Image (cartoon, rainbow, N blue to C red; front, top):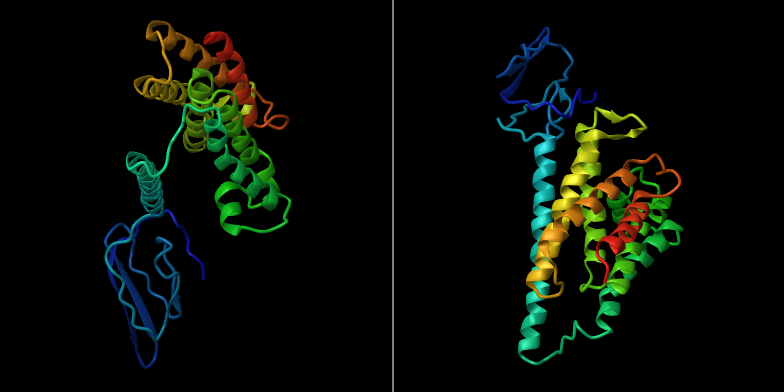
Length: 291
């Protein structure tokens, strides 16, 4: 037998089964609104996936009183992964800084070759996507984590466009231009959050594109703008960009509005969002932030 649902939280004290000579009765006592269930064969009940779906006769089972819901488990898993990635990244940066202070290595982020070194990381990921996308090899972990349907050919669309934009921004704009910063912020922060919020709360669709929602577009505008401002402020504190914030803030808002409108257009079947959004953002930002 299968589970009735994987989204309900079931709390119960214990499950006991007794075998009688003439008939067998199984009773499950719930602490919520569920009524006791009596059967002569097996017991099936709604619960979290971590609870066994079938209780067979003749077995003695004791189940703990607390089961974490699937959504809470996913949230904890994602939060732990985020902390782990950030911790690893900062550890790597601090290690390079320490080696530089000890004069073991020499970092030259202002040198012309620095941008090519930085673009090497997304280039490696680009090669991984190509190899797995053409099924020359199969990395199940990569396919499951990046694609939506589990089809390796999906790697050649959105994910490949994503890393190509990363390479382009690193080579063309590096860190001294706000154009690349805003373009990546709208693609990563804006479009990325729009997909999550739109899937969760996107019941109200945009009239000219039923595949997009108001919730997704509004979240893209807000988060794209905030991430852009945050990243520009971070780079300005480090001294990489010099901005007049009185003019920069409305310009970033204008770029965010244009990028949001482009993301909402029904052109995703022709041009992927990971390509159309950052390219249009770059074009508009070139006019908003002229050198």
